[in-house]
Image 1 (cartoon, rainbow, N blue to C red):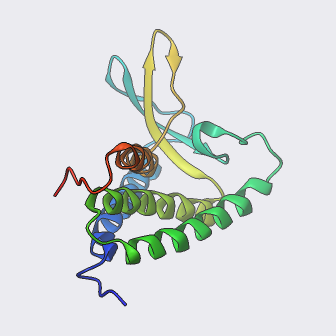
Image 2: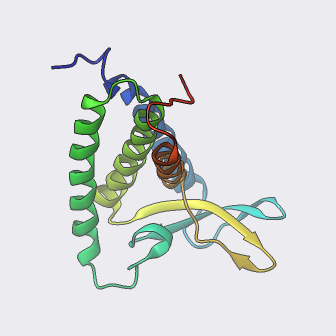
Length: 164
């Protein structure tokens, strides 16, 4: 049985940092911006907003009658168990473990929102030429980066660890 020092569990601190940053930024948004009203223009292509997402990534299924809340909480719970198992078994695969930790922190951050509010707080609004990308948050960013790292890790030659 691997101990935390020799397994991927050493990367749980990264999941904790993602979770903390996600929840702190969402609290700041809740306290500073009225939902669907306030917009803070940061640059010509980036705003801070306060929107609620009852769906999945990019508001997928947001127009559904409510089944998605429990479903996404369940999916996040299963994903958490699987990720913790994979992290515990991971040795010598630094990028894989970092990717999983980013995904774990983001998934827990969004599931906390679903439990507390019934929706996810999104606030990062990227736009160009009048077209707005669906708003997202720190958790979504960590999940996306983690997924990209998993793909990169899977495409590399076996036995090569670029982060070693």
